[in-house]
Length: 72
Image (tube, rainbow, N blue to C red; front, side):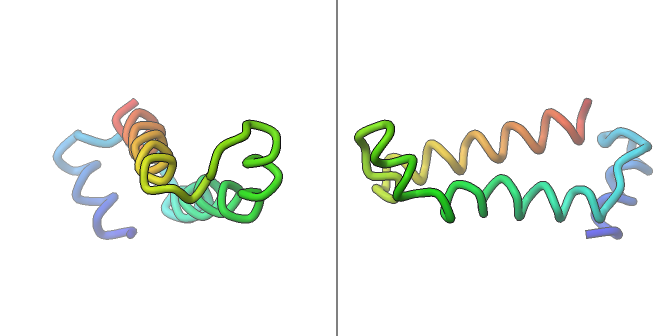
């Protein structure tokens, strides 16, 4: 992760103050919360949180969230 971020910083694609540890924590948090709470979220929103459509929507949001943070 660190070498990937360093390359992105060097080419000025990524913001210079991105911490690799925080990137890893955010990846785990964005995916982990969703999966850990899939049953509660499914009951509240009346959908299957693990259907192919729901998982693809979540993957897209995670990707967009991380990239908007990295590219700042």
